[in-house]
Length: 283
Image (cartoon, rainbow, N blue to C red; front, side, top):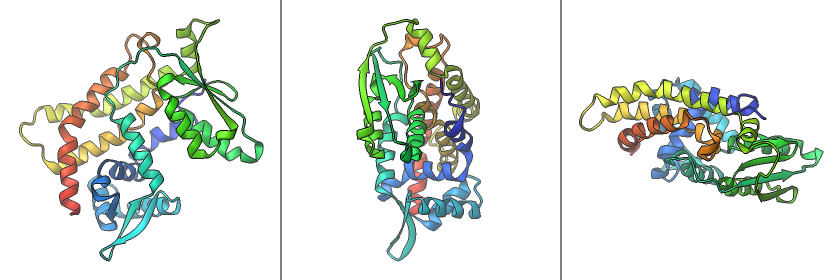
């Protein structure tokens, strides 16, 4: 088993309140109404609304520019940043995962990913393993990884994005022997770790749900932006760590179900007012 609390996957959870993560959330949730572009002043102002210091926001933007995640562009003489084509594709794919009202799927079998990547591409091999974890795969052994069948498209897209199709094969499979499948699933995935991600999210989000449950009428846009953006930043990693296992393979008290309900209570109430706040601030 590769624990989600080791290496890059654990780092993703730890980084959820950092400027870089908040900026990614801002661009993912709000920038597409601007063609993927914000002025530098607008993005910094939005960051300060989220308790990010201006210097930290500028530093994060510079790092994203160096990495090619954001592209420096002028519009009508105003300096700003737009998302790269690759990042826009990532956002579109992410919507299907992050904003999906998940229920445990019917058991449709498994997808297996097998790869053998040359030593001179060691960095790509590490990147592949890290990203397999981040989309919900579990390591069976060595270069063999497993996930529920509904993640087949994710695996294929990942191989294409890394340009490693010739080093990787994707199979559909059934588990036949020898461990009972629920036991094997518990060995492949760190279910306790995934539970902790959901429990941690619920602990963070529950006070927000309780606060807004007492409010009537249209939410205050600024407060909605602050609360929704922070909650979305905390939430958006969880659906990737969770492969979406059939219910018969999950613990009876699976924390993912109440956590999903909690997130969508916040999303349904605050996402619209938060977007309106950004549109009014940046128009």
